[in-house]
Image (cartoon, rainbow, N blue to C red; front, side):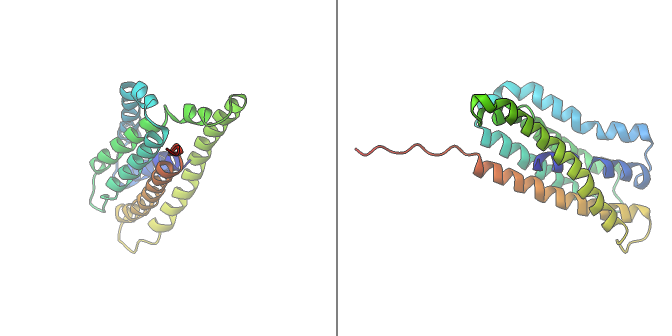
Length: 195
């Protein structure tokens, strides 16, 4: 849920900034935002079979950390930034999502007894949807709060201030989710037999 919130919850406010703050058309905005799903699909297509052979804590944790790192890169947005400042962060968040998404359903199903694998898969999909819905709501609220109280002059400065707050929250959630996944999903060490 955390990776999905951090990876995709900010897209509506990014679209607002690209159109109202950076002055792009709707088509140009869509093309900029498309960078993320292109990186997502490229990563999944190239590394999908390799990812399934790695331990789940590494893929899920590492992917979520990459999503958090992508948000850290987008903290570079400032009042005088252009749309190109988003590209590195969109690429890295797309790569992180491309690492997590192919592995998440199988990791959830393998963690449950065979009779409950359908429930586990449904829970993983529910967590994705919940992460997206909460991401839009929470990050949209953060954007509204900080873009209206920026103290700066002009729409571009206010939007940049709001986006900085959004990316800081998303980075914390993505990095926190990655650290939790690395720790909590790590398989237990086998008990050593006395000699």
